[in-house]
Image (tube, rainbow, N blue to C red; front, side, top):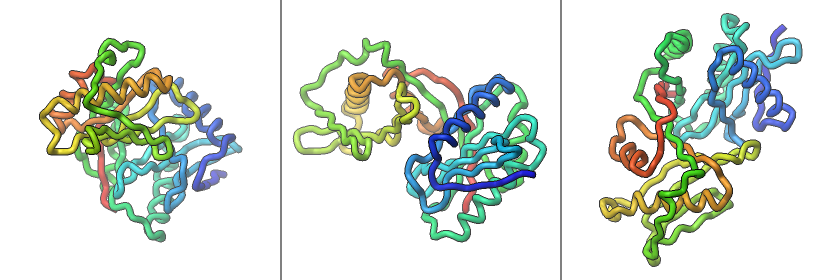
Length: 261
């Protein structure tokens, strides 16, 4: 008998169960899965479980990707991938979206690009739910162990970090010229994820993008992070080239599928 549960926030025990479940699937599939979750409540439940014999057989989470987009992360036990568990979890999510006053307009699902057909069943399932291929994204990583780039200093730009909202801003005198948001997990604080890095348009083309990024990376190193990751669209060649020139390496290539809610 399968049991489906949705919750607003993950408890410590559930988080431990999820991590053990991810490790189990990783060992069976010989693939490292990316699974994220919200640490703060959304307007609808953000985590969905399927249990069988008091064990997790499937889990789905949603994270706020932007002000109008939710990103879906899901993992199903290898032995139960033909039991419609993902479909049932996703149907519960869709019902919650329809019955709530949700501000979100789009759902995103990220699938790794591989040389084999391992994810073809997932692609087939997404097509059945009217997800459409949108674009490819690069997952980039930067090791803060290598700090040769971070010796750059700037007396012109000041970097300020607001811990309450995990935001870096870049300043020249009293003018904010750009910045970014970061995300870090309380369970694994060895790495930080950079989101929405940008330089205000009138300050672009002056080298501030590269210099500002180095200053933020330097601050993250002082905060004892070991690695930094970020996503960049394959369509955004300018940003991609900036990150590569700053020493980021390509970790993987991801296909992005989008569905309008």
